[in-house]
Image (cartoon, rainbow, N blue to C red):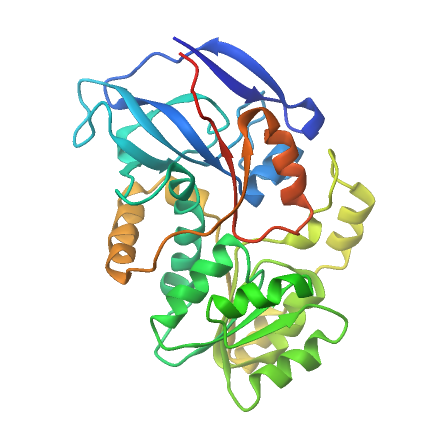
Length: 342
């Protein structure tokens, strides 16, 4: 069977081209999936640019998240059948009309969800849960600061925090996103700017900031850390300060941001009694049993459906990435495939 894929050797978005190729052989523990929707993530952009440590050295197919229909099963597959509507994560390879994957990474698509919703869920919700609960140790009534509040992780982080009756402060890059965040239930919303420190203090009032979900970097990270109360945790899961629009990284921008990145002294942290933790979701891909445990806990939370903010057809996937790079999107950016090739 033939499939269409986007393949490139990391370095430039312009190098990403469509190819028709044979499907990989179906292994006994794998399923073949006709992909119907692909979710975009910042890790995709950094992988395409070659800035993500996990990026393959050779030519590869980007993409971490998908939803689709099972079209074949290996003879050792359990709990998954041909015709099932599913969603899943993969360590690259989702920018394709079809993919083959270990059945353990395939999850049933809720009956009232679209394929677009399914491709908008796993990466962001796992990130939010692992950051807030596994690392952040969120407690009832904690005050939580969530950067990129209108993005996929930000939406789920706020919904999870509200399960703990948290006071949530969200930050966004422009005023156009404020109303959306308020509709999502944030208590306060800040547009990040030169007055961020003062705006944050005003939003917090007398409350103690206990957890920060940090994905910006630079001065925003430093000022967030400084605003934290003793016994608080700053959770780093990204660094959007390095992202810029364009086909290739802006290396002058990257070098300047890298050389001026925050320096937090671990020895002094014992005096401040604050913690900084960081993680990469690819780690969970290697520990599928932890991923399933977390997803089981999330199911009990009843957090609602994903917010799909933007959709593009498969031939326009590069344009979808270019929009995603601008930071102007809200919710998930999804690429759809109406009729997968066969």
